[in-house]
Amino acid sequence: MQTIHSQLEIKNLAKKIHNGFLMVKFYADWCTPYKSMNPIYDELANDPQMSKVSNFIQINRDDNMDLIIDMNFDFMSIPRFFIIKVTDGNIVDKKDLGGSQTKSNLTEQIKVIAN
Image (cartoon, rainbow, N blue to C red; front, side):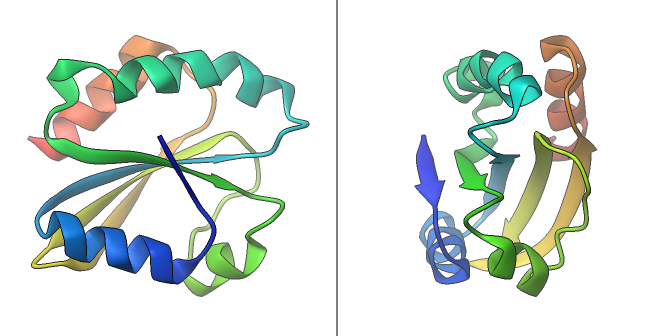
């Protein structure tokens, strides 16, 4: 799983996948709910049923506030999950999937959006 440090990295990744979806996890190392959700996110990243999602990435919230503000990610709590739609190498939409939740709930949200 790739850790993103800049808006440029996200844009380059979008160009690379061209068409598809990026799954984003915002986290902070000190966050206890993040630590409990991290294994679930890792399982999803390795799940063959998630093949429509081109990349699972993570962004440290504490280290990347400029990226979060510049790209209009609007959230207060972490962990936080977003799915980004990429068309022709451009980010065209993003959907907030919420924070801590069960694997099945997060999986279902991803499938509904990515199919």
